Image 1 (cartoon, rainbow, N blue to C red):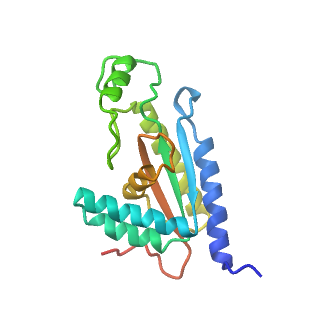
Image 2: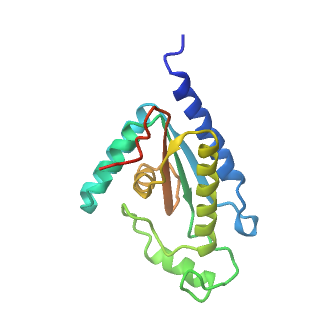
Length: 185
């Protein structure tokens, strides 16, 4: 007999559907720079610990609150983008005149820290936002409580679970009688 509750199994299934929605979300110029990771089981604890560690290093107490939510979740979808991959349209949205200048600036600032690495292509950041929106829409359709967390994205990147993404978010998921992501203190 499977020890998982039907609700928890359902949440994990929805996490995979959310990943599908994020993957198939529209991307600028049809270029996909999105990375996805479904976190379950003991890895939720690892993610929560990494969030606490990041919060301590950054002296930001709200990381602890968010880590408690992740630890109590049934699953967490991590979504990241390789923001340093330019769209090649020289739009200037990143603050640089050309994509080549933005790429050069990224290489100069490449040292990894807990925060996101930049500069980043504004098209890739829009792609990430659309992917996150598509994922949470899918969770909502299936009545799974969720919350988008930048703190979980930072921890996911620090653990290497989003490859070489420069920006990421986490979406912890839970199905219970009360939404654990509401009325947080």
